[in-house]
Structures are given as C-alpha cells and as structure tokens.
Image (cartoon, rainbow, N blue to C red; front, side):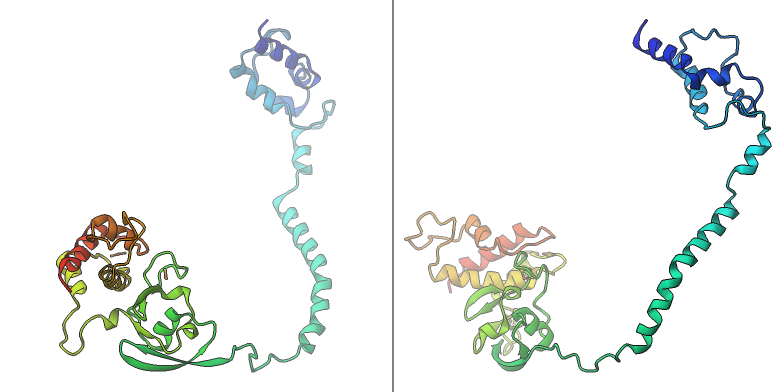
Length: 294
Ligand code: FES
Ligand code: FES
C-alpha cells in the first residue's frame, strides 16, 4: 500500500469518518449525503483524494452524533445576525460608560489654552549680500541658508529638492565657493556674499551668463528643477578649474589639470542630480564654456 492509500484507509477507520457513513437517522448525515460517495463502498477500500476530500471536510462539523433532533433544531441554536449585533452594542455600551463619566470633570475643569506659544526661538539679525544687494534679516539661529533665501529674501530660484544634501538643487555660491544651502545655517554666513541663480545674469546689460546661454544652446535641461543648482555649480566649477583646483579624477593633483575633460566635468558636477537625465547635454554645455578663454 502506498502512502496515500494508507492515509485514506486510516481516515476511513477513524470515528470521525465512520459515524456519518453508516448513519441514516440524523439530519446532518442527510444534508451531507448530497456530497457523499456511494454508501455501498466497502469501509476499507482505499479512495482517491479527489472523491474523498469533500466528504471528509463536511464531517468536521461538530454535531452530536446520537441526536435524533431534526435539522430545524440546529437552525434554532445558530446565533442570528440580529442577536449578534444586539449583544455587541450592549457590550460596548457597558464597557464605555465608566470612561464617559470619568472624562466629564476633566473637560469642565481643563485650563484654557495659552494664547502665547512661548516656544518661539529668539531671532537674530543676519546680514547677507545676495546677488549684490544688502539684506538684513531677523532669523532664528536654526534657519538654513536655503530657507533664508526662499522664505525671507523671496528668492525662490534656488530649489529645495531633498533638503539633506543629496541632490544639489539648492546649490548657491557663497564667497566664490559652491555649497548646498540646505546644509548650512544662514547665521554661519553673516556678512558673506551669496550668489543665487537670479544673480548669474548681467542685470546691467540684461544678458544671460555664458553658462546660461550654453545650457539653452545644448538643451541641457528638461523640467528645469535641478537647473538653478546645475548653473551655480557649473559657474563655480569653471572658476575652480581656471584657478587650478584638482578633482578626484585628476591624474596628478600636484599639477594643474591640463584640460577639463568629460570625466573631469562629470566628477566635478557629481553632486548635482538631474532626474530628467540631461547629463550629456550638461557636460557639453560646461565644456563649451570652459574652452573659452577667460
Ligand atoms: S535640497 Fe539641498 S542638496 Fe538637495
Ligand atoms: S532637468 Fe529635470 S531634474 Fe534636471
């Protein structure tokens, strides 16, 4: 006998299986018999799984086997939906009643809310020169330079992307060096000169800066959200290259980088993420400007 045959023969001999098979009297066996195998099958015959499974599953109903009660008596003891809902509502009402009484005094005796918050941080005067204009702002010490530019100086060209130094959308130039303005506090730049994307163009001649023109010529942006940071970063990058700064991919950092290769540009712009994937065109735009003699 194989494993399945043995298992089925054991099931057939168990009391759970045998009782309904030879019972004619009670209502359960009558209702189960629609799905049952023929009664003439010998008790020790090994059955296939497909014919026996529904039969066995029905026999797990917990019913008194020697009961002569008719099927209607089972209907009478089954909990109705209405009774269930009634008992549930009653239980919830009884358990919630003490809480309702307990909260009433607390509600009437609660002190009125304070009208003054009392939690505002003290303000500090911060002086910045932004795009050539003097600004004096009253800021909390915790205000980032990015928020000072956008929320207090109303220069919203600088974008807040990740707000944690990962995307470069907030790049500005502080005293000639590019920084992530979301990672630094405004009070730390007291008296410094800040250049944002609004300050790149020549406001006297109303002309775009070379890198701004190159971005347009090379189609170096799509949605434009990263572009203010890319422009500030590229502007400072070219100045850094012309000043002889090395990068991580410069072959010999003791020597002035001979040229601004594509690898140099990619490395130096690696802190500025573009979700639109305009990188090849950004590299081309930066290279075009860098090749022009200053
Ligand atoms: S917003 Fe500053 S690095 Fe992303
Ligand atoms: S142009 Fe869309 S994220 Fe750079």
